[in-house]
Image (cartoon, rainbow over the protein chains, first blue to last red):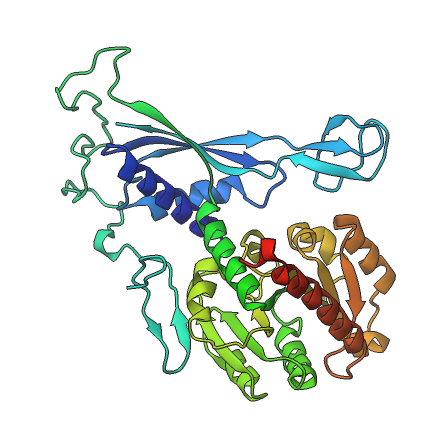
Amino acid sequence: MHEVSLVESMVALVEDERRRQDFSRVRTIRVYVGALGHVEPDALRFCFEAVTRGTIADGAQLMIVMIPGEGSCSDCHRVVPLEDRFAACPLCGNPRVRMVAGDELRLAELEVE
Amino acid sequence: MCTVCGCTTKAMSGNQELSHSAPSHDDHQHPHDHDHDHVHPHRRGHVHGGGTIDFGKGLAGVEIAGLSQARTIRIERDILSKNDAFADAIRARFHSERIFALNFVSSPGSGKTSLLVRTIEDLKDRWPIAVIEGDQQTSRDAERIRATGAQAVQVNTGKGCHLDAHMVGHALDHLSLASGGLLFIENVGNLVCPAAFDLGEAHKVVVLSVTEGEDKPLKYPDMFAAADLMLLNKSDLLPHLEFDVESCLAAALQVNPQIRILTVSARTGEGLDALYAWIEANASVASDFAALPAFGG
């Protein structure tokens, strides 16, 4: 359940931002989560409310935007959709595909007031 | 207060034990399974009992369509950026002090501590060695390490399932490892979460024992993808098991084609010379980089 630490890290980034900009409440937190990464969106949602309680992010809505996996094929040199981290190229069958998207874990934006 | 990060973590240096329990938010505990109408101590005067949210209770008490008081701030920062900043600082410190650090990860019971005890016994005359031990509770592992004569600091993560770079930074303050030394970080026994947290180490080393399934690299790919070296431990038990070594190695290479794999036994010492040769080769590469002015930090 390292999702608890991830939400704590998100709250720390929001607190960083509050030191730079004036706001009293966060309405929405939008995060990008890679479909092939190590974060389980349901687990993130599950602990979000508990971890943010009493913090600057208390009451905020968590919006998770899933980023689909993509890989760059070393044989046919095309960027292809990737179903899992170690899948072969769906176009030419080459097993050496370097993942180029799908591992994201990024705080994208806040809606504040 | 910590002068590095400003945190208020209290470190008990006497018995070399650090505690990092997750915050409990005790000042704010209130189960909401009852009918109530109490006042919340935080600034949200516009949320009332019954779940009604009133967006008109802003500064001017009004809300006009299209003129919401809410605004959007773009952040675009990696959620682990704080951890990664601590890890970068630790890595720079290792570079300047020529310390070669390895982060040992595995599921519980793979034999990490026994492997480290044996390795320290065999290498302690050649290198200064220190160990950071991560466990949820107790300092048993650190005591086993100290019995070898090596320095060890125990980090208890409390509810935490992994070590993070912040904890390692504090643990380092309790060690006095000579320049050119080896630092072994034994992570919390967990084949999932520690994969995500950079501790400033030179390499992650994943330990898998032959009493586990040979398909573990496929079932827990993140960890095997993050590691540079895999140690297949407890090889002395192979005659008693139906463990397919070849298919295990194939699974690990499928997940991470670059991973180096050594079959070892902490009990008999099989394969450990290859591990020590790997440590020596990679530590000297790291040390050469540190000696270059551009990397000298």
